Image: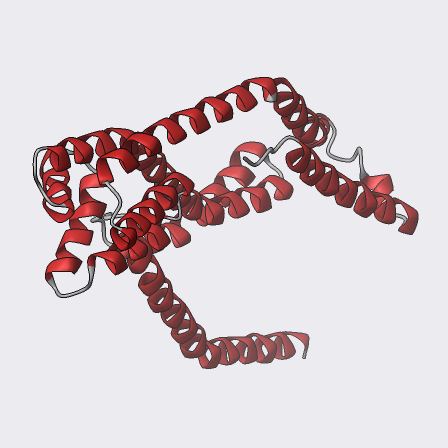
Length: 281
């Protein structure tokens, strides 16, 4: 009788699984298609020529690999869950890191581009012709972004709108300063060479001020980072030595409440340290 009941339950589970499987597969495919569209748009903005499908596949492979690795090598379900979370976060981290590197490289090339553009205008070229020279002479990513501006202008979009779209797309403070100065100079008829000279001085002074602030706040930021991640490292070290060390905390309501309060205070402390050590110019 018990064996028959077990077989019936097993058959019911199998039938339910087969009935739900098409729905689950459809949901996964729908999510994958939406994710590919979002990633394709982000990668186009970065001129990243890889296939979005390869990035989406990482969302399946990395959580599984890190989760199995955490359980097999560290023999802990906590590390397995932690590995799955890391695996899910890695693709987004890769794209964000690549985007930040691209923005930083563009910002580093901005002064050279301003000086070259000023030289082109002094040589008798127009602003659009100077931008075309930058596209040919400057390396990526600034040549790619300015090349998009030139192509948009050739398609009939006014140059002012093309520059505004560039500023909105990259969202860099120094680029916004350059674009706004160019737009004002074109409307009021100002001399672009003098505008570029003032922009160069302003951007250099701004960068010197930022470097000074970074140097003065370095010690505080390092102390904040160490104090933020020290409790987390301590917890993982204790669990690796004695897995049952925190069992008494999980077995009582007061212990669980204290753990929740500790996690909340840790997150609040990390946020406050980040907030106090950040100075906006």
